[in-house]
Image 1: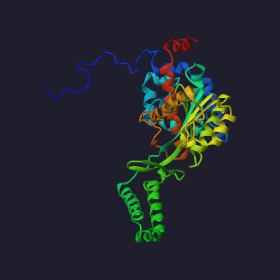
Image 2 (image 1 turned 90 degrees about the vertical axis):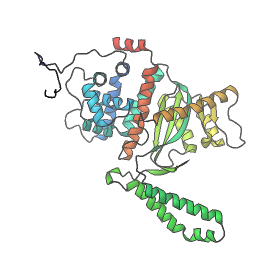
Image 3 (image 1 turned 120 degrees about the vertical axis):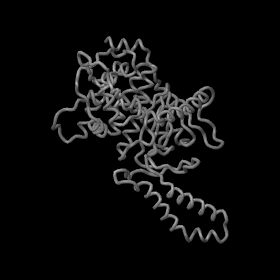
Length: 388
């Protein structure tokens, strides 16, 4: 008896349809997301970026509705562009999100990637700001409370073992000679230039060793002091958390743009620009503390300034307000940790340019906020939006 092949033993009278007719669950997160968002406003925000970046309007107009949906789909959980194309082509809730339930067309992975690169950090940031504004309108976020912090976004740069060992040896050797003192101090001084050149070669190898396509010369080293990883290569971000847990972010294109002492003020400036008023209560860790910063924040309209003091300095705010800001300050770490998880792709993104580092970072924040918005939105509101 010959081995049985795939399929039924008896042929079907009529070929099975490859166009399944199914009903999309109205409570599916992607469906609720589709029914909650204002797609006209999203398209207006994207169109403003396109007009700014494109030299002319030649060629066929893009299907913005579907492409924005593709960006939102990729934000909700980390996936390669090819997987995003496959999901949109075959997964009903994803087609509903992209507005393609009545169409046979599907954007291919190169179209989705080109569109994401066109948006860049600025475009994806506009989408994220819209989601946060939506959360504010639905009373899920409180703009009177703000907490800010800085964090590193590490680039996907290989760290070869041999080079890592060389770097560790240099650090150990120089550190040991400094501690030994005496004659070794003179050795350190004489070899200072050689050690500096060796460290520079280690850095260049880590940044540029693989292929030219991986090269992102704007990246910089970030001292973290972690066990086994004293330095990370990437960019610094300033992260702001509204009351309720929704996050906004700003990428530091240079090392100094997200310095704690500067970002402690910049976070409030960004908040005023986006929401029209300074937060009533604001918290930041001791890296942003100074008497000048406390005075500057009060001058900008912040009533309760919760900058954690350094040394024996007193808290600028006391009592219940201080205790509440300490609690809020602790929560921002959880939000940053969630965005850096494998689900959102904020950390070590597959980016080959500084602009895409920013776009991937903003997309991670966007996905975190989208999932939080739909998770906290009562189901009856989603049905009401669908009926309207």
